[in-house]
Amino acid sequence: MNSTAHALATLASEGGEHHTDTHASISPYMTGGGALVLLLLLLWITTRFNRDR
Image 1 (tube, rainbow, N blue to C red):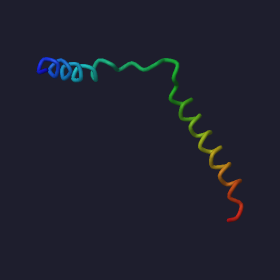
Image 2 (cartoon, rainbow, N blue to C red):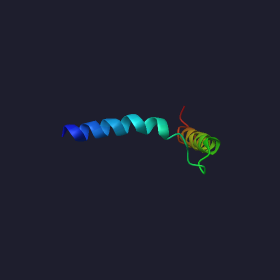
Image 3 (tube, rainbow, N blue to C red):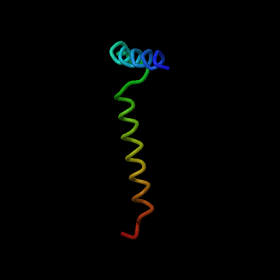
């Protein structure tokens, strides 16, 4: 049990500093733009259904 905990602690401490690359096909601008469009669409839908105000 102790060796397993030590192995997991070693893996956790080494994992963060070696994995710096990101997936090439995921663009942060496309993700942000898509989220913005989705939120604006939801806002528009909400205001269309809330006509009593």
